[in-house]
Image (cartoon, rainbow, N blue to C red; front, top):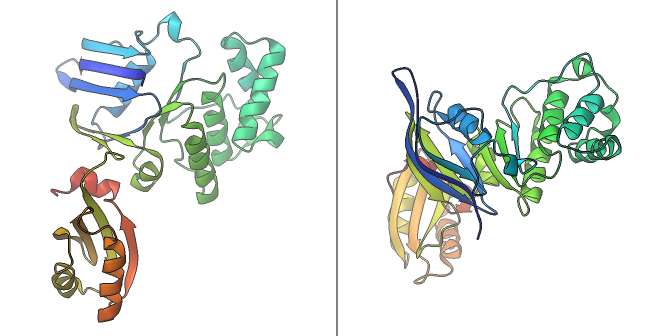
Length: 302
């Protein structure tokens, strides 16, 4: 498996303010990484370093084995800043054509590439529309189209669906999911649900430090179920489920929500046993999902 991003000991400060401190992580080909953290955690600074806009004060950053901004990365890396804007006086087609020519495409090839990426985001009919006449959601989708020009191998997306309505946000998530077989992504977002749908690796930054790095696809002998109840019967449900074969622990992570840890080897049909127990006792449930939620992976003590 090829290494797409390698960061070792990366630190960045602005004056006396330490923004990033000794970051170490890698991104492998085919991984979609979520970059999470509170405001001021250093996410935007890390994005700027990966894009080559900033050089870290110390440490090493390599993309495909090269320093960010190197000529060898031309066409391989693309980015969508959170507040990306188009010139309101020109059509989005003209501007995307221009971005294509900046990447070395001929005028004809740039026009064809513009048509391709606009079709990806459902804006083919708006090619001739001036950016200033488009809705916020359409401008956002056009900015996402710009990041896909030239078939890059690594795309950095900062809040890709912020401001989009649910239908368009779903379409963008589906597009990223489709392309993830060929393209590696780093996605920064405050939308935990969105990241859970898209990402198989999580980088959690806090005060400039990498607090958590997890792989959500990692295999484990211990498996998890998240159970959401209709009524707050948590104590009685916990007592009953604790008698099932294979149970390791049951934790009430929220009101009406239980996190069940079990040994899959001891009870391969554990989820079915849980449903049978609930039905036998007349307990109604809202949802039963396999695994921890991303929120639980990051913040639960389990």
